[in-house]
Image 1 (cartoon, rainbow, N blue to C red):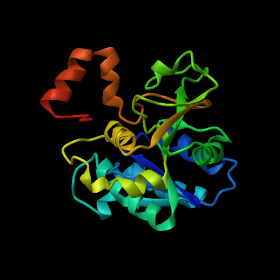
Image 2 (tube, helix red, strand yellow; image 1 turned 90 degrees about the horizontal axis):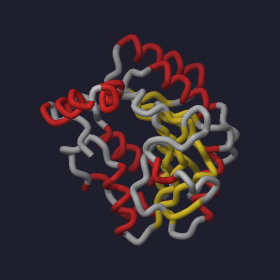
Image 3 (cartoon, one colour; image 1 turned 135 degrees about the horizontal axis):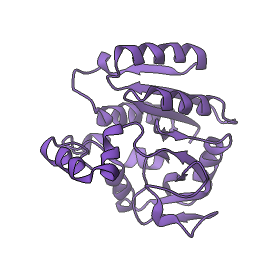
Length: 238
């Protein structure tokens, strides 16, 4: 693993996205890296704001409307495109979602940690609230703070590094196109291939759950409506 390809898929939620971008581009990182925002059919106004931010923070902006007419979400296309580019560069693929804010040392330390852990397929940073308390989707990690350990459950892609060992062993074109999200499937494939997925509770990142997909807040405020949307409209297939 010679370098990092850092990506953030974006669908509107521009305020939190700009905070994510700022934290990543201001990180203390010594390994060579590229940073790409995949804009998944945000509004015209938010696309304009992302274009302005790309000039300010010097990241690559890929508007998926230039690549496909498939409606959002296009996470599968993002993963397939990013996998191809990462493999060509012998890069680790580090996914940071647009509702996550990394710390100064997160990216470099996750890269170093992935190299140090044996047979690493995925290296994931634990998520916390603003007060530093572990939160969704890693509630099961409470009580295991300040550790690095193999994760038998799936790793979320809130802030996760997929190593070249995993990227080279599992072709993302095999993923089920009827689904929307793939962290569970890819985590399980990593384990099936004999790799190990590590959770770094030593590397907390601030996660504001579902701020990139506000309708999912209904899961907590109006669960009946959430599950009605999920099943009648086929949303959020994992």
